[in-house]
Image (cartoon, rainbow, N blue to C red):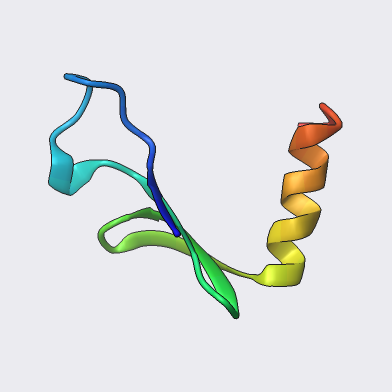
Length: 54
């Protein structure tokens, strides 16, 4: 699943940050400016966002 993090008119499509959720990893960022997390690391991040910790 790939989710683009742009509102209409805010950025140019090739520069829009994305969250690319794969079976074994999650890639967050844009072009060469990315962070790659394991699925376990992403789940920790997701839970911290859901609980309002970050």
